[in-house]
Length: 172
Image (cartoon, rainbow, N blue to C red; front, top):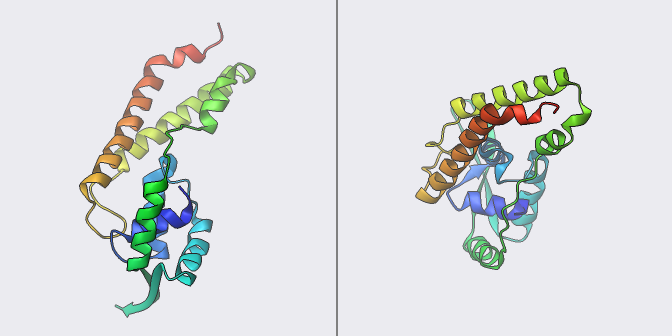
């Protein structure tokens, strides 16, 4: 899903700043949003120039002015069109998986270090992940809760599988 569609989709939940969108994408991890921080602001500019979103400034609480975006009716229609035309694929592409596939070329110490570090990072992610609150400051609809739960289940399964089967990575 491209950055413009992701931005439209997130704004369909309610208004948000570019920073709010960035935090939401980061909190969702790279599991299903391939949109990086650097692509959010260009996407917002393109969507704004096409009238698919509107921008306003907010002030308050001694904070700097913030640019807040909201989806327009035309933007909502465009989002619906894009989603109806989408042909979603489910793929897992992972630099870690690629490295582990060729791990026979690593020293045992380096391989152990990589697996231990990745496992610790996944465990930390599972502990700190808050699946019930949205970084957009809007309640998550049940569909978003479903996806967050699915992400958590994949993470927990990966942790369990890595712990239970890491011996398969050892030299034979």
